[in-house]
Image (cartoon, rainbow, N blue to C red; front, side, top):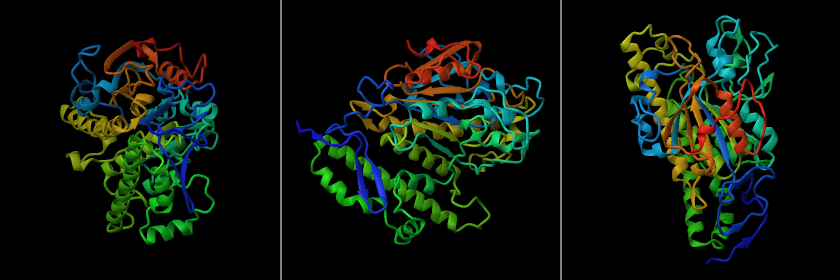
Length: 451
């Protein structure tokens, strides 16, 4: 057995203007790595939580499995999850009542986004007097986020808006943000893969100036070039398994860098106004790059809380690359036209395909005696069920990972009708060491998460 090395609680590879956090390595003793009051997994590893938002609901007939329990067939939309189905729980019956009008009239898309993680009715306004609630991710980040370099990480693919009127008298701030630090202050998502990546590897480093980053890009230098000597020295002190784990981690960092560079080269060949600056031209590539940033952030314990808006609610993006030329929002008002519903199902399936990639990556990333996914809780869904009816009950929701052994995935679970989504959030907060009796419009907890 390779001797253990006693080093400070958090280990980094250091270089000029770069600070690269390391994944969990068994050769290293990291005393105090788990936050006080935050229950670790049985392995002593930290738990993580993430929320992924997709817009405009789903074609529920192609989403909902026909059987309850473990012996169920994945329907058309969820079929891409087959390779990871043992890590996936399909949750049916959850509701966001506060996304309904409740006397406020139209504006379901804005309310769907604003309510998704807050479970609170948004004040109807297009002015500066916005108010909704603190989102579940930020409750955890504020109470248990001081053990990581970042309290939370917010990502997205659509360029955000924080003011103006977007949906029937609701501020754009509601429609383009799901994370809220305070009832009046959203946490805008980062939409540029390059900036999200570089944020992970210039943690608290004042030397990493914009000029230095520009110089590094000009000469196509990798962040690894700056920490290579540190990596060599550390590698010589590790056991064989951890050496392999370190090599795999560094390779994944470089692979992500190269893919970002490749997407930037493609983007540079297109007209300047074809896509927002800094965003990939290929939408699937954009989504995957952001998922990979989340994997690295969790793998290195740079943060334990993340959210990702794949597209804002009300998005009318077409999907010609999968044979859907009409806008997503337009199609969601299908009027029970079977062809339009089939097109919606194709869009839903596309989003699930990208999500399956993320879950697979988490499951393939080794941590302790298991995988990174074993210590995660990843909630995926929308604030709308059927887009045509703007329904906010029986929402399309997935929960992936086992939360450090506290959740039993691999099942289709149906909870009683009108069960608040906030009940799920209370359970997730419990597992992150943040105990509250109520959150939003919660009425209790979900005992169904564990068999």
